[in-house]
Length: 291
Image 1 (tube, rainbow, N blue to C red):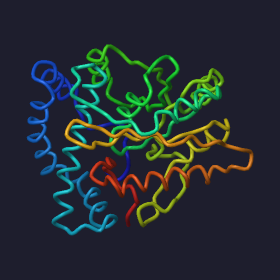
Image 2: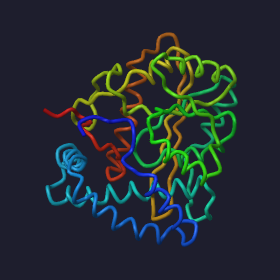
Image 3: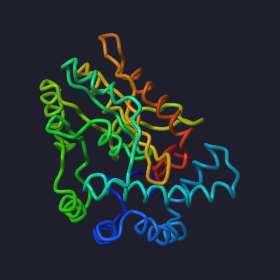
């Protein structure tokens, strides 16, 4: 896979299997079965693994052997974060714990009554970060691509009791832009990721972990257009079932602020987290567009 397809490789059966394990046996037995599944993907998913190898070997500078071990750990941590997300969303026990760093920053942004935008990424699990940093209610809106398998979405919603947030679908007619503007006027929060894009989207090249990479312009243009305060949010595994959840102090946008400056701000902050937690960087495609 040379570019992101907009959806995961998971199947509805796989999600149901792990949900049953979680309900009746708990987190650790689910982790046990994960080792078997991850080993399969490790052996037979070269289309994804080769880009992980490029990241670990060429961008992070690890040896060939160490890079191979990092790929396996990368897959394993991805599986664990998906399991953890279901546990947290569905309230399946208190096994997943967290420590928050910056929840007060989000509260300050809301208190200014201008709404705000939280930029996440595919490192760690920013959904868990949002869950712990700010309680979901009607004032939370998540910007999503509506390309995930319907059966998987239905399975997850039946397990978690439905969504605890509003969903804004990204559409070709740009109607989602109007929904974002209306939500911000109501002092609501918009959550979106800014490190992936669909084919055809406007992008810009930015230096990232030692090489030029493409990032979507859209999220940063939205922030600029609405002059919305924004923050960066991360949820990183710090132990087997423990997370560190981060929210940066919010930034204000002025007339002089440019879209490029907002993008650079995001990319530099994300790069620092990727260098600190490389095994939790979950982008399995040609992120740097290698020759």
